[in-house]
Length: 105
Image 1 (tube, one colour):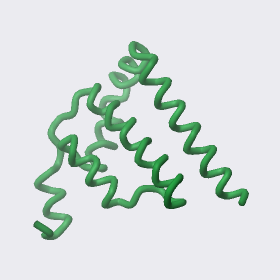
Image 2 (cartoon, rainbow, N blue to C red; image 1 turned 90 degrees about the horizontal axis):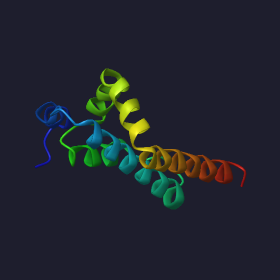
Image 3 (spheres, rainbow, N blue to C red; image 1 turned 45 degrees about the vertical axis):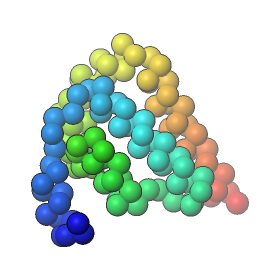
């Protein structure tokens, strides 16, 4: 159904993510950003971001709220899972390289 986006966002406002789900969503958002920069020379659209977040039962606003409210737990999780932190760092670096190469063309 294509109703009012504000209404659908209210309905979907957030179920409580786990820290692991938050980190998985972070990786998925980075993958989406990387693909968009490689293919479309842009960040993901708000609609693309919302669609991805909805797959985890949240919204972009809920994702950001979680990051602020549970930042200590997220940092502890990443410290205990260096492979996840490594993927976050790698993707972030790749995105920055793609953006810089496109800006210098």
